[in-house]
View 1 (cartoon, one colour):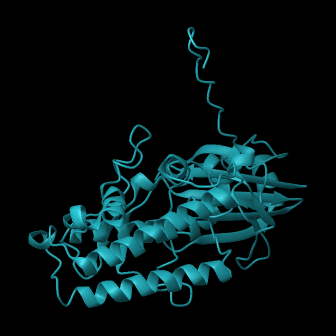
View 2 (cartoon, rainbow, N blue to C red):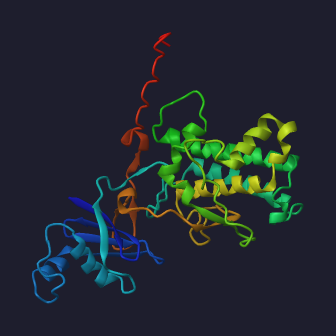
View 3 (tube, rainbow, N blue to C red):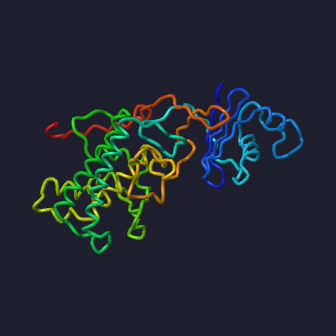
Length: 334
């Protein structure tokens, strides 16, 4: 029987420990992706001896903090071996579609992914052309015009699409039309407000946090760049100044964040990126995930090999609380 656990060490690194019969797999999400496959009998012999009092008398039937600490000591010379926040993973091998949450070896890409990368690349190409005209500086943040408006509309419709896909693929209640009161359901699931990114070739320009102020009380207005998109889409003549350079950069940064949040932190990494997955932005801060929040693959073999069985629907597993009915008027009954 497969037993799967997620944990965090004292330095904050996430890890996975899996035991199936006498075979154990240890994975730590460190800079060099520490992985090892060993035998459970090693722990049994250690726990039943007095050789090291730290481990003597440990549980030999199931993984615990002590046994994982022992394997960390044997495998990871430069990693803190103190195990914290140990949780058992109930559905190893399953994940929520488009919800990476820092999950390990999260590599479920397909046709939709490549379409989204191409769409993002087209937007970046247009931005690159614009940068020959408008220099990225705070002085030019309020610059506006028709080309910026066109690109802002294109970028924000891509943001809408990526948010909508998270909802639809995770069993969100179907509607004829969706808006920011629906899209904001993605905020806590992906922790979008905790991402910080920079414009790669202009790292000192600004730290972009396009979702930092997003809240349920004003789900449209608290996305300033998205609110600007709405105004210039429906009222070009009276709102053209809202199609400014700062709002455009925020909107494109939002695409970068959504692609990372959905497909994994390595999606744009120069050594591990998927084909043509490049971004003008770089993430400098990402959300921290608890062991209980991550999805865990099934590890196989002595060389690192992961197996994902299939996807689950987040909103089917975590239903949205129904809103109480609106009180009726005591006079007219409506």
